[in-house]
Image: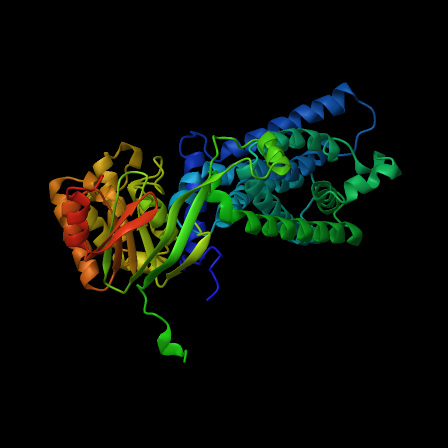
Length: 263
Length: 252
């Protein structure tokens, strides 16, 4: 008999029931002590939209894309989704060390739960964006059917990223600071308050292979231009997401056995 | 010749030559330390916590773990739970394993008792349907029915214990792993908890129980393992091991 070196699958429970309860926990803990509850989710993007519209619309002036507040919000929602998932995901294993060391649930569930809970949280912001789109006079169009096509690979991308970052953060606790700085830099590297069209051609690749930037551009195609995103953008998004997701899963899988002794 | 009937029944727990060590850490988990590790891989020695431990439990058998603090009892329970992997040797576990180790490890203070029961049950692998069927029994056994809608942070330690214990025993485990926890409740609950563990055992649940309380060990276990610095010093019927452990000449 060969020595059994794998983390034995002791857990034969109900994944759906487990996810549901962990996500409910996240929502309850997040919103229970907030008098305005879910409304707080909407305040941050609205404030940021207002500030960016004022600074880049009024203070700097100049040529700005039409429907600038909506244009900005199309950038903020995918960006917020990215930063909230990545920070929450990175810290998830270390913050849940009590669970890792006491309960034999599959470890992957913990960072993935963060992304799924953030998805629900971001869907509230997305609903706000869609409502504002209508309020700005753009009627819902068939192009909206492209939304799930870009959001599904994006969720997979964020799951992969969270899995990888959460695992590495167990061994190198500085990862959280790297992630925080990276999020700040990314705010400028994603076309949130400017248009991709002003980027010099030689830097364009930096944007096209960045799934966050691809998401922002695709959101604007769908909501503002009311047309399907270009196929190249979708392909880049899907390929980059699949790659990051696969990498994250592999990294997590190879490190999870040693979580216990480093927590 | 191997065939289907040779698969051990649920509740079988086997350790064969299991060894486990941990790295000395001194709380160093920064990038600097990882870089130093690359330069000098052997700078951090490991210390052995469990060394060449073997035992074999059939469904319904119960094994007590005895030994001073730091002897490796908790590590052994964590290995059996599947939270840790051995470096050498083999661990075979068949059926549903329910740990009852650190009370309220899965409890969140801001959630109500009801919400925590659902979350805890899901984490222990209880399905939605099983929980619905057993809900009344869990609530009844815990004795905290009137506080179910209160956040758990308002519970006393004893109340949290009762709720956690109630969920764990209603998971109908094939293998139950326990440490000292059941000492926290009041007398009445303690009696009920013992009764429940005995009935689980009678119905075929295998029990691994680490305790310093030799009276409790002899009540709940048939066999015992005396661990000292990760090694088995003595194994056998519980009464013999306890006698040796408490007897003159031992360094306990």
